[in-house]
Length: 225
Image 1 (tube, rainbow, N blue to C red):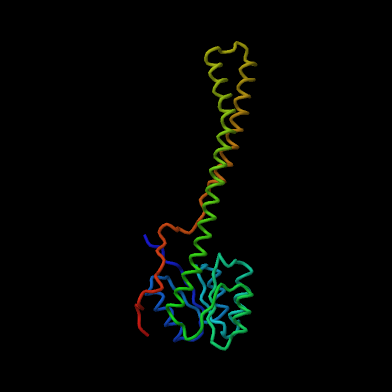
Image 2 (cartoon, rainbow, N blue to C red; image 1 turned 30 degrees about the horizontal axis):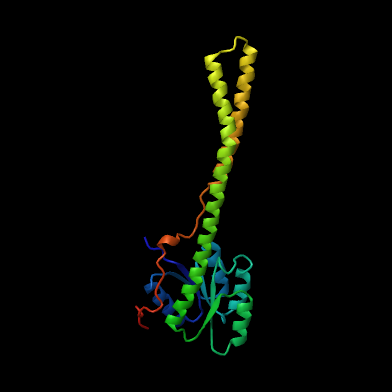
């Protein structure tokens, strides 16, 4: 099943917002759009997109203001941000890149260029996610090895003690109680190891890289303006 990246567009110009929404949706993205910075932050607070495409000049909070707030909570690989700027806003572009923007495009937006830059940002995001998952799997494997070592000794002791009680039942009740206490102690050790494994093995959401079909920036446009 194909994974469709979620794109959030923050653009106050209705025609630009509509054009980007239609074209990116036609390319297979799940697209949401807002018209100002505050709405953008509220949207991110309820559902974090895979990529934020944001106009620099917006009413109220500018794109740079929003970017500063976003970077307080999300690194560049966690939430890529591409700024949309007019040709004469070179100082804003520099400020945006220094503040943590991943890239930028100029207006009027050239769709193949935008798609190519989105492609790079999304590959970085999902690629790092895959590396993090690989590292988590490595940690789990190491933990399992250690757990097997920790479980082997108490389980062997439990088995030998129970076998001894069955084959040669002690006459004195006190001796039986003593050996059963040892079995209980070893059983608790086993339980502690199992609980640690349960915490380590708790599923965590990760990008499903194997089925992520990235778009081709060279495709023809699917929607005409």
